[in-house]
Amino acid sequence: MSCYSFLAPWYDSLTGDVPYGEFVDFYEDQFRQQGGEFRLLLDLCCGTGTLTWELQRRGYEMIAVDSSPDMLMEAQAKASGSGIAPLFLCQEAAGLDLYGTVDAAVCSLDGMNYIPPEQLPEVFHRLYLFVRPGGMLIFDIRTPDFLRSLDGEVFVDEKEDLLCLWRADFEEALPALIYGMDIFSRRGRLWERESEEHVEYLHEPSDLRELLEAAGFRCVKVHRDCPQGDQGRLFITALR
Image 1 (cartoon, rainbow, N blue to C red):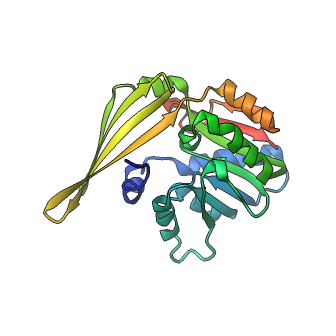
Image 2 (cartoon, helix red, strand yellow):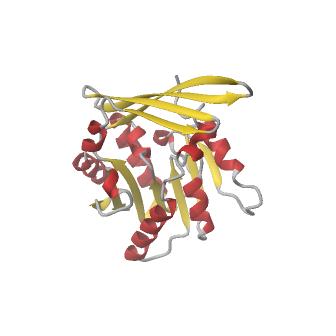
Image 3 (cartoon, rainbow, N blue to C red):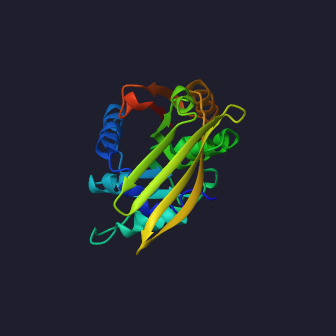
């Protein structure tokens, strides 16, 4: 089972409650506090690009990177009638390779939780290379306590032509939350079943701070007063 392939066409309909505007408001508030010009942004692990397009709508030039071709296809499909489109690149986070630097990089909605701990040093190293001096890195994670709290939970999302069932199990040995998803979609009079497995790794904020500082970032801050902070999410900001 692969990750974000069968789910891609349904992702937006299943995440309609995500407050993307509040995420962008948070980013812009951080930009204002830092000062300087923030025009060219990187959206790492961009998924279907909803956040990418919201940032572009607000006047930013966007580079969007994701490792899933299926999610990027959904993101590009949103370009109809929008004028100049973001630059979409299909790359692994640990293999990030841009054509130059950006003013800031963002990574939203558990993107960092999908990166195994052993890959984080290289991810932060590459982000340090491609964020300009004086620029910013902003990302969010699910807290360790929140991920552990989902152990054994079963969730159901139901739409008119879709049923999504997912089961969560926390593996302390990794440590990570592993959840299998069964996606039932209507095909005429029949229903088709497809499956995926997702892994979200536990990252301690203190460990992330150490890794960011080792990569060269400074002024690392953990924000708990943030979008979806009451839902087990926190934001981390760092300066290049």
